[in-house]
Image 1 (cartoon, one colour):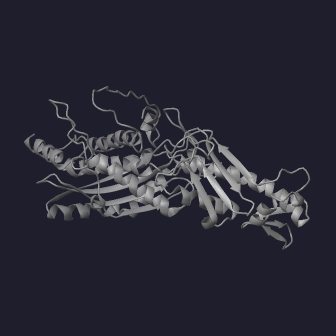
Image 2 (tube, one colour; image 1 turned 60 degrees about the vertical axis):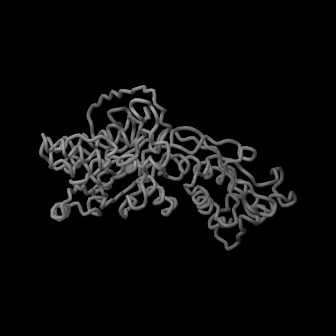
Image 3 (tube, helix red, strand yellow; image 1 turned 90 degrees about the horizontal axis):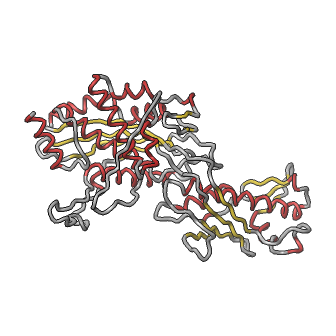
Length: 440
């Protein structure tokens, strides 16, 4: 969490910044790293301050952001806290999100909500996160004498769809049918090592390790193909799963080359038999996924109940490998961020210290009906820090969702004079804030 305070300056052109973070040691159970691990909180601090400043100054919060966004022409940009953003189009993200969310039509929707007795608020949040830190990751591609391939990955799938993503990378690089590739992860007897599935690193670093291993497969395969096609190695090119002699129609599939690799009589002199290669990739520095979230919330002033009624995201996670699994990651991330903002809380009895939220009967979590339909669009700006151009997506939804949900609730309550509201924004807490504001 501490390592992510560098994003407290967000995507804005601060000339100077100084940060102090107060950590408090309590006698309650510690919280393990949660999706985002400090990134959503850092974004919330900044984006809440911008909204508060806009209210105090009497200016449009969107316009205040627009004036201060880092322009794409300034990349690479060194922030006031010493981090370097290598690429990004923050203004484009926001303008696209504003249009998709029909922010211009919000005043009419707010008036319509008032006629129904509801308070409606809108929040625009520009999020950025530090991802895929500089630790190595491992991959291996191993062909059998039959020509079939097995992939061994160090990063472990936890439901994110790694197998789909990594097989897709392998298909694009080597032309192999994903259905015919065996996939193994999490087996310490067979996988050399893995540094962990965390920090939005698996596709960025694990995928790049797989890309590196594929490069080695192609380099050795090219030598074997040259022998089989009776051509010079420099005349051999590879595409669509086949080696080809430049300027001719003579080709040989990679799978045939793999089979030949185990037959010494078909190999160039001095070449080691077999076709299996490993790749280890370590990035030079962090990547910076970013995006814009627009959330609309309605609050029932009589009960304090909060309903999210609109949610738009424009995300830049670099190169999009698989759009379906990416949207799944973002959907899940938003749900977790919304849960933290609106309902999730570990509660202890103040007198006895007894944990009161010890099961899911008492600990609230978001469900499908907590969320509206989400409109998710990608605005990829590939990074040059890895061969895939990927920035990481595992935490992208959470980083923007927590501040977007909270700021939307506060925006709905602001006309009543509510200026402070702690997470989670439960109905009871929201109702008390409304009553306190009315008494004041």
